[in-house]
Length: 572
Ligand SMILES: [Zn+2]
Ligand SMILES: [Zn+2]
Image (cartoon, rainbow, N blue to C red; front, side):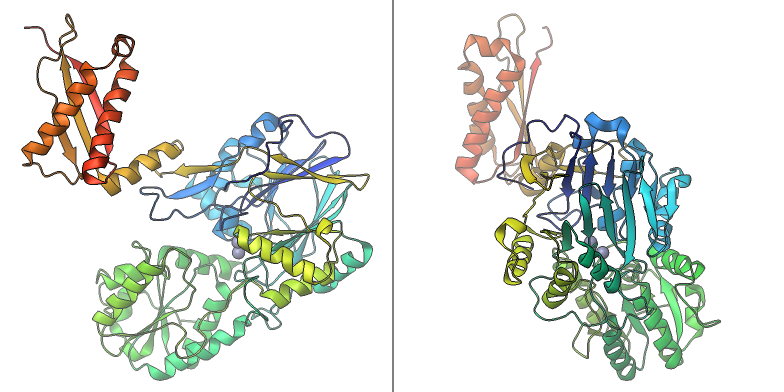
């Protein structure tokens, strides 16, 4: 997240009377970590509090959460978190956030159900959870602002758009949405209510930009039936299907099809198990009696009588599917005659692990299919025509694209422009950029507030600094070189040649000439250091490090981590 806007200098001062600040502290200019600060003289709350999944260039990191630095000066005034839906990029940072700010969290039943499981794992207070219904309204904080949840269709049950009735006007936040005309649960997007709000006047619309690059409309969730049906028809052995474990409607469709094709269902993977249970308890999922078969009993069934639902659509190494492919699941081999269907899109960055997973399945003799035999996945985000429909329904004074890369946000702004919105009615926000609305109708962008990413390495009970992640990356790429200098504490002279040790660095351990070259450079850097630097251990180490880095880069084009160790030689 890098913004070219100037710093909002007065950000540590509370908003004045009549001023409302909207600050995305994550989720703009990136996918994931959605969190929006809403701040006025009397109100302070968050809309969503998501995490970002780490990529290959963040080794050892389990999750990435927003830096909440903006909230610190107002720490005792925080009132609530309002949730649009239960995807990880909207709720994943809450365990870390609630530990610091144990405030009430409002959301629909499935959203809070998913969150409850997380809070349990983190030993957090479940009484903070406050369920709301579709079209339900809640007064936030001291009641100055009222929030309203409007149902939207998305790839998870109970997703909502959020309306904030504020003294500065009505603000609509779309959440993640599509306009599915035939959702499997019949719960349609509340367009009538959105239009009604539009008629009465909406000050600002923040809308999902994920699929702005796709023309037309996103296919309805119901089209996936076609591809799965085709897969069932073409498969004599077991049908393995991997999908996102929170996509309950997809899972319902899979179970229904299994039933129609006289197959029993095995569920493999912890989050799938848990989410199915949750959905059943909330009556969001109906399972025919006895359709589920415990994995321990899977060997009792003919391959053609089974459908296996598993986690791992992104190639995650600990998932049900990955264990299966490593043949760690007893009694449930993957073999010729079987088929693996990936009923999910590849989240950018996961393409390589997914391709590797498909290859492994084919090596075991199974057929694999993604969309080849018919659609087996439908996006949960609306395409251009749906985004245009929302803008036209709500007709906001101000259009603010959210949820997407900066390119997505700009394209979404351009879409609004093509519908007749003039440039002064489109605000392009970015991570940390503050948008202010005033009761007198004015609007401005005073600059950015501090934002950033915090790295979570589970088991380490504090956040991992960004520098640690950078060091890990260097270690992974180019290794590490240690140089040890022994110094006579009396004279300040070196008592021996510097010793060089390395790990993961290209230098071969038996390449003595190269080690000597480095030792010589370290010695010279030490001996030529001016007196003032010699007296300062930190500066001295820096001088040696710099000299070594320079010669290593020149001779090998690599940049390992260089760690000088300067020790007093033992007396005698
Ligand atoms: Zn979502
Ligand atoms: Zn999202």
